[in-house]
Image (cartoon, rainbow over all chains, first blue to last red):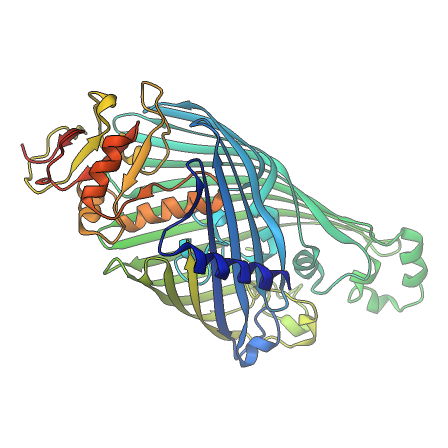
Length: 419
Length: 129
């Protein structure tokens, strides 16, 4: 397994490097990395696979990144990442980011730069760091806003990223604009649209365009207000031909056609317009975070006649509030409440939810946890989540064979090393 | 929001490489420098940032009193940059003596010392008045 090789390589580097915070390859280049191993127990519903029902160690993340500074203006950076989440992420090595960064203007009152390559998208407070265990408040980022379905679509873009900041005596702004395409894993989208895998066709790539703006007032140090707007689009490729789908469709009773629509779909395109409002306030030993998501999604589905093709427009809404308490430099504790509704006009999605997953349209839940940084490079995390509705339950192949419960909890402990 | 006066005797002082000459700072500017957002001094020299470990008492005092930011917020900013490829973290030194030495000998360097610590050979701003 490639993730095991990366983990082994990281452990070897750990043994070699001694107690330094980074491996300095030269004056201008550094090597950093992390490895995270978790044990997750989900007694009520299968979380990313069936094994977690009895507790599973198949949750690990490992990343290795290199940084080279050619000059104060020009830098290069890249990271490979392996992410195993039982059956929902296979642990294969992937290029997480690989970019050139040229800062054109670097002055005390304004900066401006351009990044090109595969760049992480800054959306909300956590999108760019959702795979960085040491930068997350607990084991997971808030699942209501950063849910798995659009993870690949939003995580990074192969394209251009413009960034900058402007500062006056009383105000500071920073901003990013990004545009590009990204490879996506098809399975989560297939489950999102059809509640199962498709016999033919897959979603391969998405186009994303976005802007992120943050404001920091001098009058209230510790306050950050942000807004992110992202437009994305992806479509089903290599779907069944009309003639094939039609030939099979006419052999089954019309009453079964709707339930079997995944077998006859000949085209699907999804357009999304996402807005995230963010607020974070850091005061003494506390950090308070509040975010709201509004996602307008337009889904076009094509079927051969006589089955009707359709265009569906829904508004997805989510919100969470989170309080973190950091009583010492080593310890942090947090509590979070969150809600997510795929369709704000049909909050339980009762009209479309499949029989085996009646509660897939919504989620409400509490999460509590803590992190103990018992050495500068080692930390332990514990988290417990108490949920109603299954909307943020990670999908995995075969999940349609399990009848999901409305109320479900999961518990996770993890150990993280980074340098 | 000028930071040129530090009335509390124990407050840390900023130290600069001697070639940088006189610099003026306000909270936002210092904050941007230590958050690694600004890369160059006005004279075009690359900024080299040095800090003590996040757990050190002096680092905590410097972050809270001078930068007006919590140490955990700074840590998260650095980790975000490091693991998203958008920047680098400061160089961490172990002691104040090491801090003084690297700032004195590294062109473009900025760091900090305790208010009562001798700052021979570097430009010092703030600390006991």
